[in-house]
Image 1 (cartoon, helix red, strand yellow):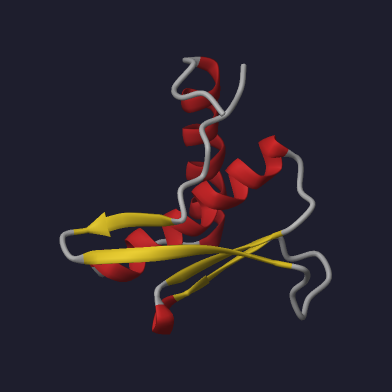
Image 2 (cartoon, rainbow, N blue to C red):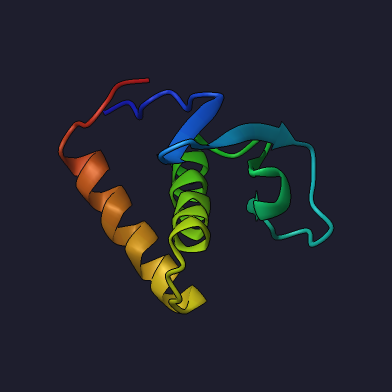
Length: 97
């Protein structure tokens, strides 16, 4: 199955849009994505597989949702939700790339 194409902008709440940008690297070498709340950006590392890139996007979107909605959950819970959402989307053919 092919994954959905990642749009350049994602609306996460009424009148709240995050721009998706790709970067060569982050300060921490193992970082694959970053949610930049102050400028409403989701940064993704260039060179990931389609699957990992989509998982990174889901992960950072969860961070943006929590920030914009005032939801406090642990980073461990973010990882668990990322895995669950990716599984649902991937295994039910939602979207094509």
